[in-house]
Image 1 (cartoon, one colour):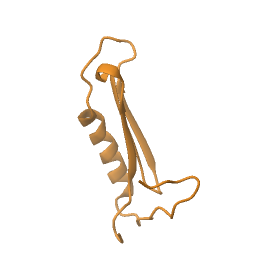
Image 2 (cartoon, rainbow, N blue to C red):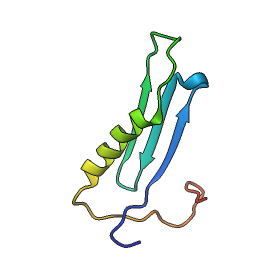
Image 3 (cartoon, rainbow, N blue to C red):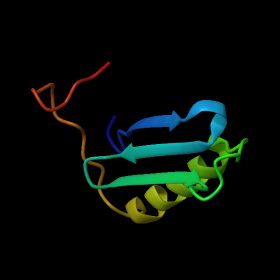
Image 4 (spheres, rainbow, N blue to C red):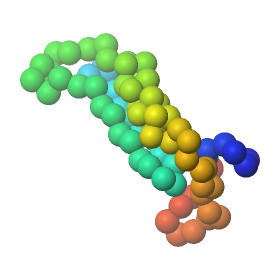
Length: 81
């Protein structure tokens, strides 16, 4: 789609939501975020809402005003699906 960014990403959590993570990328930039408290193993209740917004805003701020680059076709390094 011309004028729009192609974005890939992956979320992740640990058992009982002790952490929440998101990695999002375009051809220009990859951003990773994690919410966790390694000093408190009893922590529960982290959510993707806490980390997703930070990653989304970081990616959007960086890409604002730049030219979108599409991911190229499938290679041995990149898969679509």
